[in-house]
Length: 298
Ligand code: TA6
Image (cartoon, rainbow, N blue to C red; front, side, top):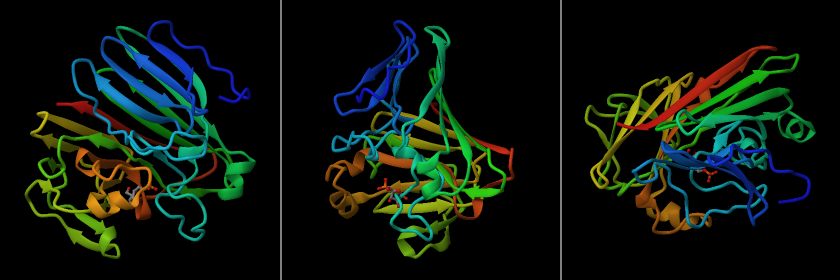
């Protein structure tokens, strides 16, 4: 870790900040309820594991862990745009929030209650050079037997702005070919693999038979991953989010990604809590928007 940063104070015995050998800062949380890890660079939750259970989040064994590089797995925070920038393709995919260091605003908790960390990212010269707006983003990470993530964005400028956001969660699953997903039956989606064509899911649970990259607009449903391999059900509840994104790269895309193992695609599924495309949020000066994802075992 560069000498620029001093380690924030932790909570003895349950929440500790570490300087990683790769130049990042990690917050490690361990209570009788669960364990978790958050990297300050990107406010990136990389690990969540309720006590007595297997981890709920997937983290690639080939991920980069370096300042300025996205982490492959966990919960990347996509902001203020999703996927490729609409008009400046040279700008980083999924925005700059996931590769920028966030500040620790507060850290509290106990063995009994679990731990809550609040991280923030405020606009500065670097962010304005990519996105000419003033904002304050806060991510509240609540670690109990469930993981509750609350992304709040405030317009601290003098002009309205619109932005996209996603909690781009990578879930750990036993086998993408065996799991099913409920909550989106009959829903409309935009198929990113077919020029964004608008399609509709059938009435049966969603199963995966190939590369999947779908945006479900105007959708506020709770989703459930049914995983016979563990066996377990992972529930993804949300509020303040009108888009759900579902992604698995499958074989060819997995092989094409340098920071993802060729054989890792069966072990992960992204269900993303988002506001993208027509669901982008618009804030007047002084206004704020709050989006929450709650991840738990059923
Ligand atoms: O959320 C799905 C998606 O937009 C896919 O199109 C895929 O590119 C994925 O995100 C990963 O994006 P990344 O920039 O992390 O490689």
